[in-house]
Length: 432
Image (cartoon, rainbow, N blue to C red; front, side, top):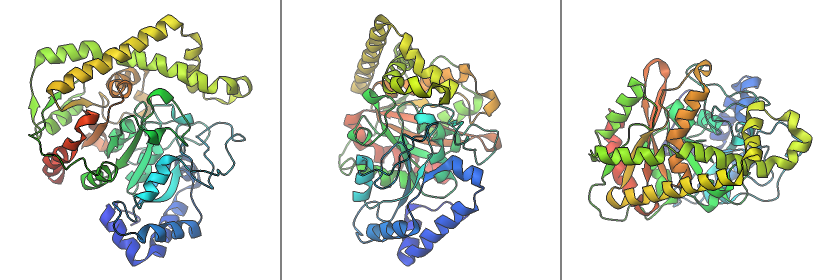
């Protein structure tokens, strides 16, 4: 357990055999982490007695879809009797235990899952690299020089290290998609939903979304069915998809090969004219997203800036203060782009069931190689699904030198019944 990643069934079997053993091994593995590294991953954990009680409670209901599954939760979500520190650079506003829990925590409890840890987000979940100057930057398991990635990078790290088989966080702007891709993990970005509403520290409330991470395709399907229990009860023809290889930036050879490798397993149509039309519309989404995000970030943080400006990471502060200098006419133009993006997807889903896009034009990059250009190119790929509130599958592939990347399959909220069929088509690809 200390060196391998267990799937849901294995965790459940161990927990049934010895709940105390599962809890103690988890806590022992945390203690084995260097203190500096533990600080970058783990924001809070229940006490041993609370963990054991929670796991026993979860195991008492055998018929629940996630019975006995341990999970980690990004520390932007409220959990009763634990603080929500948000990865913030000032602690006095965030260090008190809370009296209520988020809807997501309550939902997971009702599904039989058991919270084992809250993971440190990037500062307020904002930075796409996953950096946090206050708690330290979470390291990548393959190489400390690699980017961990995303607002929920530590959540991905917890799954990658085998601490838990499931982790949740916000994916408003790739907070789940980016680190899942860089760690070679599976995941799902949910459509705009109430799990991102109550008991969550917001980043962009108008389009906030929750995502999760698994390390294997079978657990991805199990988690999906837990949240969408009737999604595979439909009879339908083989889902039809379209591959959009990029939006402006050239893909690396490895990312292009991984993208095409997954596409070969699926029912993909070719229509160059459609690709041109989609690029014309969707390539505008990133700039519009960044402007709208800045306005909402400033609305959230503006009063704290009066007292805590010097505490913020300068890169985060710059993103927030863009909202102060955005004239109404520019905001209105960006809102129009958002509307056009939604319309483009609506028209696309009249003909097709899903759209394939890469998540980043490069496999797991070195920290020294992350640049404004790479961030902008990644946001071009991330922003369309974010602006249009669309659910998205995350399907990884391996690259050279311990690097990874992933495909995002963007779905219509009205066609989620195709997900089990898509995963069935890909099971052989991941078992080879």
